[in-house]
Image (cartoon, rainbow over all chains, first blue to last red; front, side):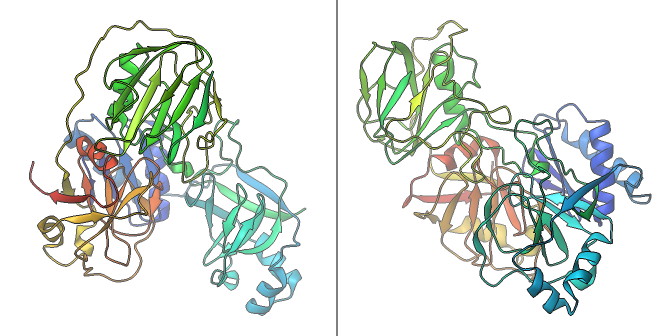
Length: 202
Length: 276
């Protein structure tokens, strides 16, 4: 289903994150001229195209969405490796809550390939999906007023790297020296939707 | 160089923002009332997208170290300078601007544009993410760029206040509300609250009742979206709105009416309509 989001936006319901990523990739590969924004989400892709012929764009999106409904993920893309020093303030409490040793927490966090689901909350803040279910824990009851840039954290079913210093309620496992956000780089974000990511012990 | 002697209640540098980066979590930002910034730029012969100053409730004092052509558009100021016409400010002069007669945001364009360092292709202050220059403070020095265009207009008769009526298109998530909710949104006026800002106009009025509970998976948000948090009190998204969100959007304000929303003051009443 494709829903209208105002005069310039169309919200395509893809039904799954994988289909959102495939539609996002297909649209970026052959971007209709008027399209300004393509914003993938867990079950949708928002397309903003001021001045576009709406019915024509809607038909094109419907056909693209149909084409990406089935198919492989972005498995052929490169894997970005993020080296992590596991010394986070919440590492021990995460181990306690998960019923694991600290060593096992690190092994579980580094043991799976994650996928960048989407970005939000702050510029460059990527929600990394595919986290080992044993590490799925609620956010902190009281968010920290400041979390340093490069902090590696988990919350709910996601892991993330804080792109800049900000308040935050995620549980801190460690830190990385990899800069995931740099306004002087093009693109400014290391993480893009659909990209595969692996954490490793630094 | 323009020296900010006093910025008034809140003032920032704004151009037309950072479109195209929403998928990286970057708000578009840019002038909240973009047509007024474009007009002010045209009046001083600038390309429409050069950076100017967005004043909130006027009341700024600016000292011009160098002479410059300047124009004001948007919320008309009670005193200090003419609206909608380019005027010459001699070197060393101080522009003392009064409060707006109506509206909230006034745009000051200077020939050559405000030439602070761009971030991700824009000189806009993004109040949500912190990208771009800091909001103006007493003592802020604003460099002015080299003029490129010619001044071709003498006067643009300033538009009067437009009625505070926002035309909306229902959706994309009107089905998350009880049947007839978009009509309900339009039935009675809402009041603009004090905590409105460049992110959104926060409203108080009849509660919008949901038919579906639970959380909507995060999805892309558009300018002018009327988002409804669990309180049932709507927020109209302006330039610094988050690129994604998890609260349902009952309707979206028509693009031509977003500048009207951007000129609403706390305490103002506003109506929505499905007509037009």
